[in-house]
Length: 77
Image (tube, rainbow, N blue to C red; front, side):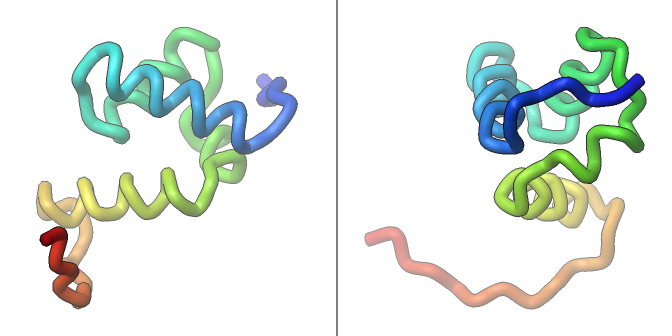
């Protein structure tokens, strides 16, 4: 099924809402979105924003699904 969205930003917003409302990971939120809208996960990949892809990659690294990449330490103070 073709993804019917007005923009990547709209999809980003909807995924963010799922993450916060259900208190789940970005990976789980994308899967939830796909199941809710009857969309194949491989079809949604090209519609994700780079920020969402980055968040998913970080989660995947933390779960050891992807090899760790070097990241600069960022102080939040």
